[in-house]
Amino acid sequence: MNSIDEKLQPILSTVLHRNSGEAEFHQAAREVLESLGRVVSKHPEYFDEALIERICEPERQIIFRVPWIDDNNQVQINRGFRVQFNSALGPYKGGIRFHPSVNVGIIKFLGFEQTFKNALTGLPIGGGKGGSDFDPKGKSDREIMRFCQSFMIELHRHIGEYVDVPAGDIGVGAREIGYMFGMYKRLNNRFEAGVLTGKGLVYGGSRARKEATGFGTVYFVRSMLAQSGTDFDGKRCVVSGSGNVAIYAMEKVQEFGGRVVACSDSSGYILDEDGIDLELVKQIKEVNRGRIADYVELKRGNSKFVKGGSIWDVPCEIALPCATQNELNGANAKTLIKNGVIAVAEGANMPCTPEAVQLFQKAGVLFAPGKAANAGGVATSALEMQQNASRDSWSFAKTESRLEEIMTNIHDACHNTAEEYGAPGDYVLGANIAGFVRVADAMHAMGVI
Ligand code: NDP
Image 1 (cartoon, rainbow, N blue to C red):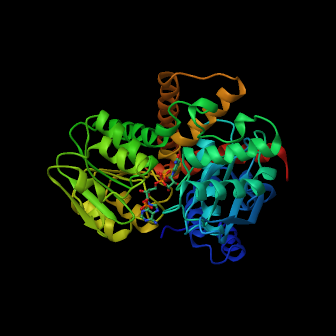
Image 2 (cartoon, helix red, strand yellow; image 1 turned 120 degrees about the vertical axis):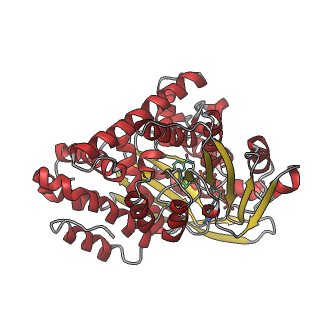
Image 3 (tube, rainbow, N blue to C red; image 1 turned 135 degrees about the vertical axis):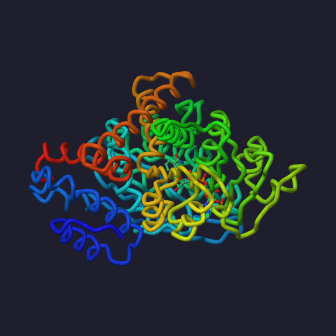
């Protein structure tokens, strides 16, 4: 564990005490506070008016019951969450996650990270996150619809285009956003396109939003590699997950000439030395809603499925964890380093444990933290809000070129901030400080609220 500035220690102690048992939130808060030591020694004014303590406390936390009826006519109860973390820069903005592991600590860590990530995009969006412990796996389409409708019957009173704008995350894609948008529209009797992002193209969605998080992560890595005088060409890559972020990260890596040989889901990973056949992965995951193991049955040739194995055992030069939090630990990092990894970028939120991050940085591996590397998704959501506000619809090329520009700017902001604060090459420190300063300046201007 890195050390924490003695002036910041009491703030961390308060966070730990006030949010007891919320391990992921503790982890995210500790990481940011570790980086802030260098800011507060240069700018002690950030201690004024308990600003850092306020930034660690969500503005509002909503927990609600979500009753729904399954296909056997049984009543099921889930729990819904929305944590509205910080609105200093704009309406709360952040995804909704449906996964059985969801609890208030997970949503709080995601909302906290989102606040700094959204600041890094340079766009006018605050930070929030939501979700439910509902497990969409194995549910029928009708069950998904009934659940989404019940979730929105409560959530609708807390959101709005100027208040809080949710999007997708794990377990929430275009289908779920459609059902939620439909119920919001009915409850409010108004077509408020800007209330949700990640919508379908025919009713106000943005081109390139589906691709944005994965594409953006790879744009960020391209900038990092260029900084070290190299590129993707011919490099062997491993991408964990096979959901929205992983699929489009793989697509961009392949476009840039990299060779993706492995991807995964929660059952295990597939290895294909011929290079992953992405159209087949899309068919399995986006159309059939199947398991990654199906790949080996459907693909002729040189591929295998490793049930329950760790994808990080596969040797690679570039590793992109794109599944979930804490999926890459210290032991995995050691294996990757031994096998010659040169760059790691977090497509997912906080997929690397603190020990793994330290090992990468110590070994001189280029390391991009999620709040910078995966910011392309929320940035493109903000572009969707812009299109909705102006009743416009941009081309794919225009939207993607804005995404590319934003990712380059985020890379440069992280890189230059790390240099300015005496830690060249430390993208974690650069991202935390650059994001913090923007939120803190806005909070400072608005007084104690
Ligand atoms: P999806 O639901 O589309 O895909 C998630 C993938 O990760 C699936 O392959 C899933 O496998 C796997 N996964 C999820 N939980 C676990 C677990 N506990 N153990 C192993 N594998 C797991 O989600 P996204 O691709 O949208 O999100 C992935 C990550 O990226 C998350 O951390 C999310 O917060 C982050 N992110 C997403 C953004 C977006 O725009 N969608 C924006 C920024 C960050 P299985 O199907 O077996 O569960």
